[in-house]
Length: 138
View 1: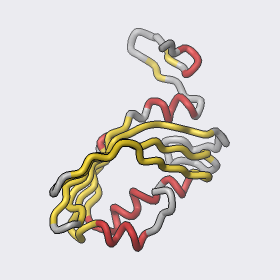
View 2: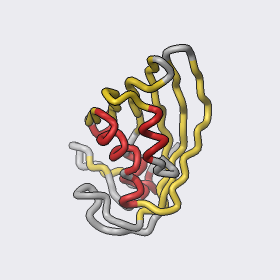
View 3: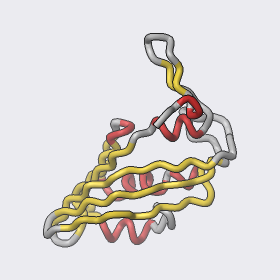
């Protein structure tokens, strides 16, 4: 993700592999779609950083926790059609299924609410309550 090395991505995955983006309820099938997904942050972000934290592996699986950050300097499609120039930082996890030393399926799990809040968005609940980043207490 950080380097957008398409040759490396292609080498890691089987041609028929799938990649699930559960946060956005999308599935990417095959190398071209997976490359598009894994490099999509470069279309809107600069100073992209991806840090793998804890990684657990087995003969047919791997699980990794990660931290992603980028500065939003271009629109994010129709979801964020304007530029904020703000840095976003959020955590996620990826589950990987392996066959023959290559990825046959991967799935990202991430909460997209921090992304929306860090870009100045808000979350409106049916009770007319609004959650903004500065209103969240830990």
